[in-house]
Length: 212
Image (cartoon, rainbow, N blue to C red; front, top):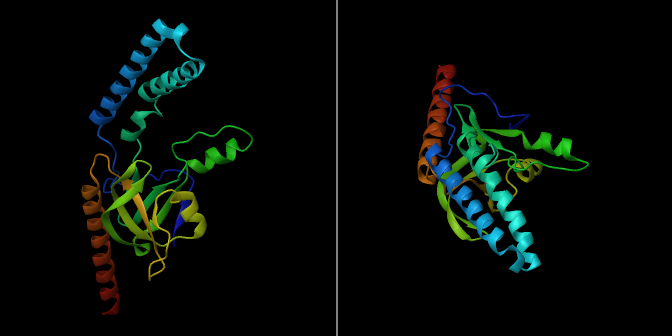
């Protein structure tokens, strides 16, 4: 059965934890920083000439890009926190709000939930493959799998990445669990398939030994 975990699990050295390489996040941080500085510099010189809506846009963009470049929850988090985890037992997925900090009346509850992870055993996972995934900007390659999960689990962990909301014949749903960023989806899929295959062989071997 799937199981909710209150925070990211601590797994052994054989676990797979894909993250962006540091050079890539550092490049994104540099681009964000240069963009923020450039926008701020040009805005200072032409501030009086700008319409109000442009001034407001600058006041949003400059802090946002400085935040992305310099804060630990900006680009750098992608090379420090894995997109998902996998080990000999199954796969572990982050809550859909993992990258969001909530404010307001229900902030404590929501912030606690966003730290949670979902463990899905290999028995509830099938057909791991690379597939085209629709996005707001068109489509991109993604790592997709079929997962058996409850409605609540799908809503909390896979709501925004369901490739096909129709149930498969075995009762699973197709979800995209990794998008087209380094490491590439084909690499992620190959490693995940290898781990799942080794688990199934181990399970069959154990079952055979018990039957002897």
